[in-house]
Length: 320
Ligand code: A3D
Image (cartoon, rainbow, N blue to C red; front, side, top):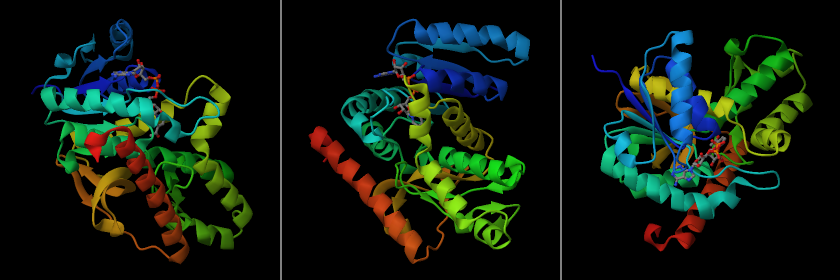
């Protein structure tokens, strides 16, 4: 049986980490693509030389020509620029929109059957633009944000409760911005909602509110510490979980930026919602019910993403 092929567009901090994790998890052969000649080739060789130590069999190639991604089963896109301290994700639109155009055309020509995971920021607008530029069916392209945002929330909760991260589930919906929507009612420790854990005295409402706020600002916290770039280990791990669910038809239920066609009252946009990822890509959108406060938060987040899409249309009239 042929091995799967994973193409990574962008061989920077996240791209390199994705390449290593794909090997460690035996997901398939890896091609790293970047416009900076030498970097994808160097990272590919370095990881290939780690394979005998770690004991995984995969081929690694670096490329600066889109022909190398031909026939990829999964494409993960991190091409573009990340944030620096003081920048919002939205400040990246001008540069990263042009990058999405080049990447979209490369995918359309060489890997039109792939399942594509976009990570480039501002996420919800870039995945929307990438779908337009690539012409991919909307069930074959998603954005990675919710798995990461939920993982950050899970980490803070596990630390607060002093329990295993494995037993903490968290639900973070909406756009990947400071007005994302962490839903405490749907987040649990071993099935017990956080709202009940407050009643049981495991934590206080104030502490819970602070963890929600820290989750919302989680990306900025790391940008401020690193100073020269943004988070990359957890973003890479999150995208690998999504790729694995597709390649192994696991049908995991993961919060991702998915194309909505009427669900949650939204159409024609990618927004973070729980979806089932299996061999057919996005197989199902799970629609949960909101209370009034949650609905207000969700609508605000959708409005910010709509604003970003309008900004993209302003930059590139072909998208209008
Ligand atoms: P970085 O280490 O700078 O890597 C980006 C790579 O893209 C560099 O190697 C560039 O050379 C390459 N590149 C630039 N233009 C092109 C192009 N036209 N074609 C191919 N490659 C190109 O950044 P990173 O890996 O830290 O982050 C990558 C992206 O992910 C940024 O836009 C971040 O903002 C974003 N990001 C998103 C999340 C989410 O949760 C959505 C989290 C963290 C980072």
